[in-house]
Length: 344
Image (cartoon, rainbow, N blue to C red):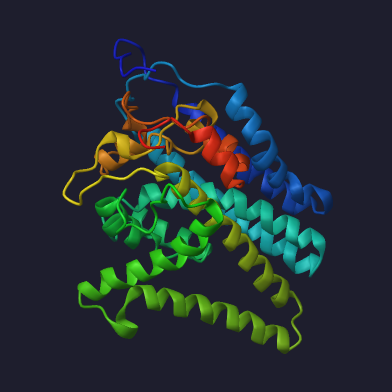
């Protein structure tokens, strides 16, 4: 892989439409019901890793397109499709009730939401506050019960990434399971502190407001269930499960993007070697260039379609999908990552 290729034509933007396959399959599964509700699980957890390996990695970075219009439209398409997917899930939960297939539908919907909601919200969250895209990001994040993400990500993660001040940067001796238990409450606490410093304390703190709104929504569903509306219980359980798997998937991505990388002294600026990258085509195209993570930290205001690879950045053994299963077994993860970066 090199950073040459400026004489080549831009990569076709339509490749990024591949990211809409997952939520589309989940919608179909939720509509058809039964074993079809596993479509998202099978595609993301089984087919995705195979595609990461089979499609290989991009060898030459092509120049970005002159116009970002199709990519902006794609972000909005992801957002719209996500809410259609949620509607199909709640329609399924309404008729299915509490059953094993509700669990399957929740897992499939949550896995797809990790991309269609959170990856989209991550990109839109870097837009101007209170712009239409920024507001869509807020809606997407609330839909999976993680509304504080933009605040923590923009104001702490980007500032303190690859240091102990960033709860989203995993230590080298930290497995994914302990990381999950540390980072999720750590990031919420960090977002609270960010708002506190701006003078928004107590109930005026947006992070607390989001948490209260989430709790109110779940309590309302449970109250409806007590009043005899049995569908409310399946709504509450399903929404909790799909939100949980979406959040865990997001934090898995945070884990593999910075695992073991440290800036040293606190004054050292972020460099490309402080984030793991991959040019795996399937992960690149289906996750809106999330894999070019060094460039995102170096140029946070640059939209995803203009991100570039860096030759000196540490490289993951494969794409994000293929790294999922070995990452779940910390000794295996450490073994395959050994020697890929200084001190690891």
